[in-house]
Length: 234
Length: 217
Image 1 (tube, helix red, strand yellow):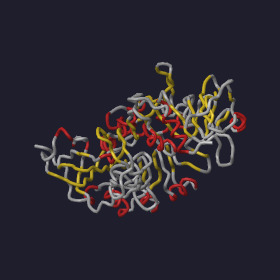
Image 2 (cartoon, rainbow over the protein chains, first blue to last red; image 1 turned 180 degrees about the horizontal axis):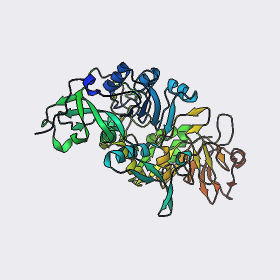
Image 3 (cartoon, each protein chain N blue to C red; image 1 turned 90 degrees about the vertical axis):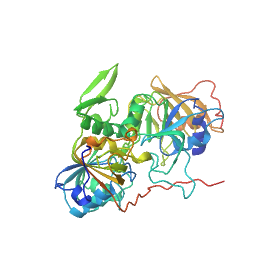
Image 4 (cartoon, helix red, strand yellow; image 1 turned 30 degrees about the horizontal axis):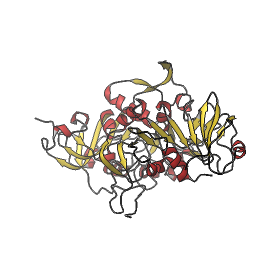
């Protein structure tokens, strides 16, 4: 029998979140972000959070909602443009920001979930990202030692999921979600469509349910687009 | 002097059939509009797609389908989506044949700076550090001078670095240059631009050969 990871709603899915915890939050920009979990974190008003997420949302959506309420103490990200409140808090020193290369961020999450404590990457050698880190040459090329990341909770968003916690993502909304799902001590997956175990084709699963502790069907997805860009029909 | 679109057009002439190409935000994005006849390439966007197509028609935007610049896009037949770790495995593993990106500064030793102006602007490096550290073939697309008219081709970068000794070719609104032996080597000049103008706009060491042809744009 497949294990049942389904929880009733977002409130029970976030049972146990506390002040000063470290969270991973999936998504790239506003694409593939766990909207329901973020809204619940705002509602709970917990503070002093460390958030590991590629971006920090925009002023009035995504992690920007947590920034507005000053719930985040530290951000670990690769790109944080497009957010005035973020910039203000960072320049005034209210918010600690650790910027790391996007590929290193992805691999550090993957490593955290895969039981690999650290790895060498060429990214960032000779830059301030490498300051204080071990550098070693492989095949004559310098590499920087980067450590794995894990989190108390990982919040991820998928397109479809089943009650066993298996997940399928849609298009580029996949991004950081699969690695973060692996790296959370408790991984909470919210999906647009939740089906019984057995209803998804095992060949098509992106994230195996073993990485997911709680799953629920989300609601009221806004799925905002940051830069609507189109071409004319001529 | 070239327009941004002409810079993209000139870089497109560097594309070779069968290449996978990663285009950065800004001028590099325009390259997709100028793929030469008979050349088949596939575009990667590091947020997780190979086979990126043009922008969608109005009304057909999909919030789940964007590029690394967070613009709505489409997928070409044969496209594939993947997670960020796989995306950067393609990049670091040198499975992508060409990377084109913008820069605030480039130094004559191949150093590049494009992610931070201390005290003024900190948006982050995104995937740029992974891209420049790994790609064998990097072309920088940028204006020759900044908004204050100062040269962006320097003896050494003054801004925090994105990568070291990695840029080999630069296409600007004035010229095509190669970086080699610690100097900028002038390969081509923009139509109507004199060598003296290029010299005046280049703060780093510029090597000028006897013959400098005009770009074909």
